Amino acid sequence: MVFVGEGIMFTGLVQTLATIVFVRAEPPGKRLGVCAPAVAAAARVGDSIAVNGCCLTVVEIAGETLAFEAAGPKRSTAPTWANWRRAAR
Image (cartoon, rainbow, N blue to C red):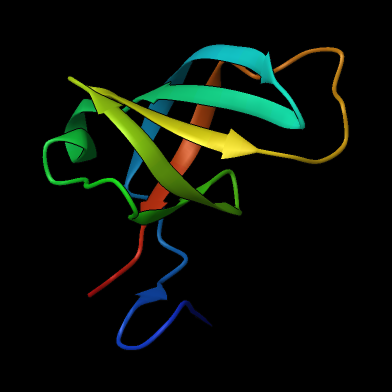
């Protein structure tokens, strides 16, 4: 288990398989849009969610799509799906 702040932790259990709907350049990194109907209704801006093992913070919610900002190594291709885990409360 990985602890993320006071009273919040990741269990390591995948909650759902989500679909990556967009990846676009947004310097200095990228903006990632993930469609995850199973958890989007309960998500809030500022929530920490592990996407394929990388802890990301929700920056925008549009219906069933959550957006994240990410910086890091450039990839020539992006996956079309993601393993999804919300932090336990």
